[in-house]
Image (cartoon, rainbow, N blue to C red; front, side, top):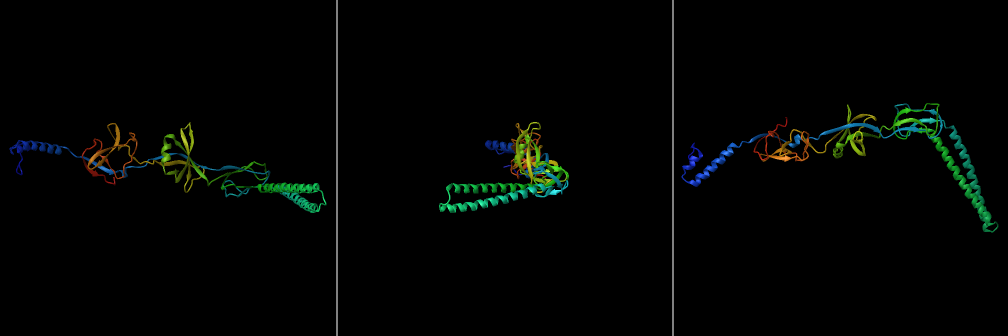
Amino acid sequence: MPFIGDRRPAGARCLSAGIAAVALGCWLAAGWAVAAEETPLVPVTTAPLAELQFHPAYSAPATVLALNDSAIGAETAGSVQAIPVRVGDEAEAGTLLVQLDCRDNRIRVRRQQAALDAANAREALAQRQLERVRSLSRERNVSEELLNQRESELRSARAERSAQQAGLESAELNVQRCSVRAPFPGVVMERLVDEGEWAGAGQAVIRLLDNRRLEVSAQIPLDRVAGLRRSEGFAFETDDARLPLGLRLLVDLVDTRGRHREARLQFLADSALPGAAGRLIWHAARPRIPADLPQQRDGRLGLFVAEDERARFHPLPDAIEGHPAPVDLPPETRVIVEGRYGLQDGDALAVTEQDPAL
């Protein structure tokens, strides 16, 4: 056995043992030792995937639209008596917008009421006459023909009363229509008539914009539609606000000129003003890593990760060179961020953790 401090080559120490087999074993052991000493550890720096991955943001032009932008019309004809609202005023549902002169309609109501009263009197008379004839018929003092006649007269009186009742209701409805009221909450955008003008039935008198039921319309490029469907977070962004949205639908129609599809979204809390222009912002559902991290080996793009002090190449099948790549590894995976350019799968590593502050 060589003594401590013997500086002779390993082969010389084996020969001095005097046994050929032992000498051969020593030569092999010496060769392996030299090989191990000559294989350097590759210095690398790693960072957890959770600190490197991100969700890319995408955007598209968007506009806030009101669900109702209506020209409110008069439902009956009449002279414009008053317009109690002005442009820019907010109106609740039922607010009086325009008052028409309603004297003619009120006269028709009184006329129909009188006609209904007369019909009620005729019906009452026909009812009494029928009851008398029925009483006499039981005593066989009147003919069956007279009984049938009185029954027919009562049915006619009831039909006339029903018609006069319908006429009265129609006249009363026209009186109500003299007051043009807001059908929904909104902002008065335009007065289409002035006081003293004659408004015909069906003529538009006020333009009212619904400022509460709003949607955002955005034009989505076709190559972004699939990613938008998978995204869970949307926002409408202007110069001074970022408001959360929820996706209502993607219109099943492709604009052949711009090669895009329209998305309709709803405000989840606060809303922007109708007509406001901005950008729809959404984020990719799958996390990405920076475009410079993937390396190409054997014609494939992938990540180098550190496992048990060894470099492991993890292919990324959806990666495109020069673009952030989607990755589905656990967040705690140790990704090699420095020293990766010359690495090969299986290389031994000298690992240093990246400073989280960097």
